[in-house]
Image (tube, rainbow, N blue to C red; front, side, top):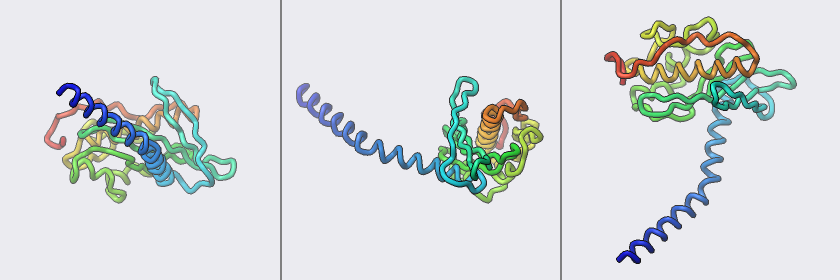
Length: 198
């Protein structure tokens, strides 16, 4: 019996390993395509491929994708990850040359459908309220925490996480451009507080 179970385990392990090896490149390519689409959504029109620069902030390395037209930078796209109600929220945040938020795109999330998942709606007020804002003048915290951001109804935790991801991306943008002003975000997440939380 032990030999039979051992053989079955070896065969299963070999099958899983071979399937993983066969799909790893395809999965990586799909992830690259998601990232490329997100970059195109959050910055002004650009030429060629973005120029990538690594920035280390608080011990974490971030890739800053610089969108170029000729020799001029027309925008910066920065991927930022935070934890929401259902798990990690992965955003791409775009900034114009003057430091204003150009747009945001949700790359992946595990938020509740019909509640926190509303952050993916391109036309929702929650996402559009960030467009054109300069984080040095706009308090990147939900209004429940004294900030300027209107949260998604019944999704305060998701709204906080999204807003924190935008603030984190802005701080990476500042580091990449050599600016010194920090994002205005002094909110401390208070998970589970209030009736509007998921």
